[in-house]
Image (tube, rainbow, N blue to C red; front, side, top):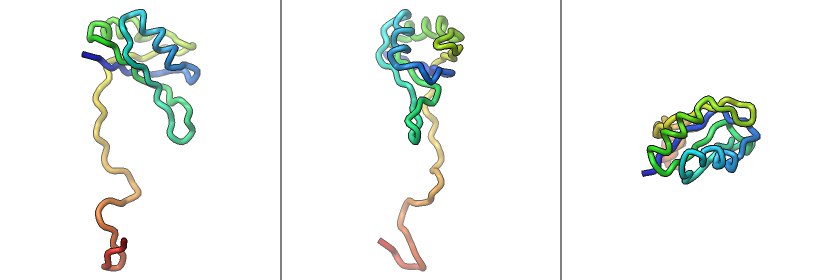
Length: 104
């Protein structure tokens, strides 16, 4: 069973390959992802590393949490499932009505 880890406080210069290389010392890395800002396409400063087994993930947490990469001390812990967010602003959804008439 794969285990996904949250990796925070990443330098904007850190690449997915850098994460792969750093975490590979503690087991098989299945996937690395650095989250990017939709608007600017720049890194957001955090990402995820998926390890092949829970044992590999635990070793990675123990050894990488607080370790410095590109001058930044990483925060590494087990990733939590993404929380459902309430519908954002902007309205929408369902039928659009204008002055009592359906508008298509």
